[in-house]
Image (tube, rainbow, N blue to C red; front, top):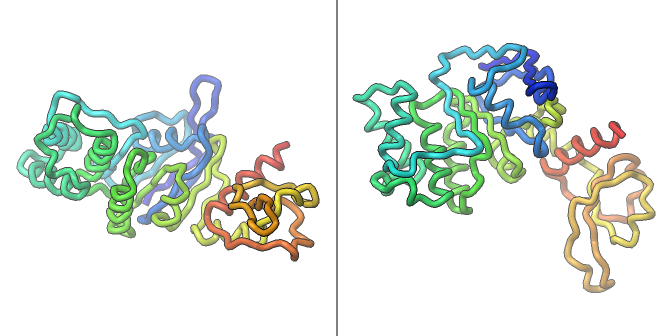
Length: 285
């Protein structure tokens, strides 16, 4: 278990993390929020890469049990994949009698075993990302901190990554930062929504989705001016061929009465996430 107590991080006068308190247990958490919300800074502080300005992080196991994938992962271009992984194994304190077997294990896990003798400079961006995931998995960590892990992965490799995470479910604590709600839908039991360095909501993914129940509708674009409630346009749907007009998917932020003539949409995590963010913005005005 990990307990974060009143964590704050400042860069000069700018407060990036504001009195965050969380308890994380062995499960998969999705950390979501807009750009600049503080996701990367929070992961770096938990990983020990950055020092907190104030607050406390209590981890009930040795910090060697942390696997961390930074948002921008790089490697030495002139070394081979195996040599790069050997370097990470040494940094993690894996004994030299064990690292060969461990490196083979994680390279097979991310489908890079056949690339172990290839120099890193010859790897594609997606392969480098997979190498970053592999180094995070070295040593079977009990805490995985993953910052935008699926960026640069093609659909097949993203699906493979999802399977890796699912196989770890309940065995380790995973904190996965992403801007892709699709990742959250299929991987995360719990969702942590952060904005401007503050936690807005921590809840099960189903609970996040249910918050938007009865608030998402398909409406002809020309009728938007008739809505009594403040609203957010989620997207434009295909044109209605019969009436030759645009149909808009909207999220209502206030009054939801008198919507009987419109088609309600089935809600998901993205709807609930947007509702929390947009209501926060509305109340801040």
